[in-house]
Amino acid sequence: MTTKLTLSIESSVIEQAKNYAKAHNKSLSRLIENYLKSLGIPKEEHVQEPSILYGLKGSFSDDATQTDKEILQLALSNKYLKK
Image 1 (cartoon, rainbow, N blue to C red):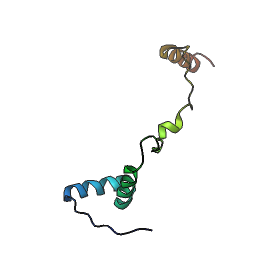
Image 2 (cartoon, helix red, strand yellow; image 1 turned 60 degrees about the horizontal axis):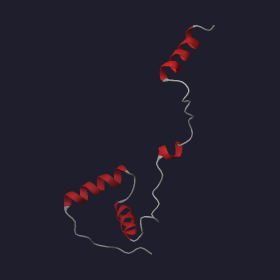
Image 3 (cartoon, rainbow, N blue to C red; image 1 turned 180 degrees about the vertical axis):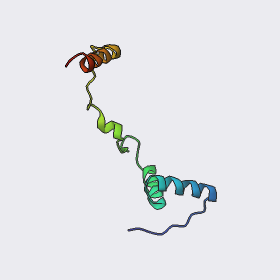
Image 4 (cartoon, rainbow, N blue to C red; image 1 turned 90 degrees about the vertical axis):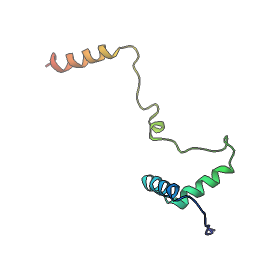
């Protein structure tokens, strides 16, 4: 159930909040609701939405046996020396 709420906030803060909400494709009401919900949740229970980089974790292997210079030399020799 949703209930209407009236707040008194400085106009500059409202404009900043509107810009932030628009940039993140969320409504101002949703941002405020999420913030108020987070006040009641202990930090250990609060789960933050994973970032895009978090989703890529482990996707790429790191071959630590070669330096960047060696990898570049190998790539260039494969490109220009092999036919």
